Length: 105
Image 1 (cartoon, rainbow, N blue to C red):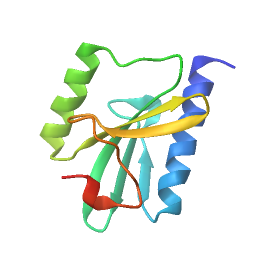
Image 2: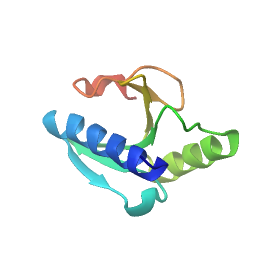
Image 3: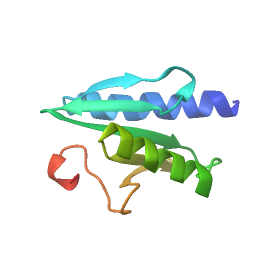
């Protein structure tokens, strides 16, 4: 499976997790500038998805944090590790639970 297919599968998996929790989820074409935008109960945030094989460099992290600041939305890093998904707030590294919106400032 190509890197594109692996990344797309993760994006769909994350999208489905959030949709089951009642979020409206929009997937960006070609993952530019972000993979997913999620909205629920008047709150919005951005999601960047990374698989086992990919990593988030310093420049990309800085770009994403700048985008989050510009949009006025937190950014969540969705990372797949050995078939398990971890969701963390990119700004502070705290874990995020899609069932609990209070985890996002």
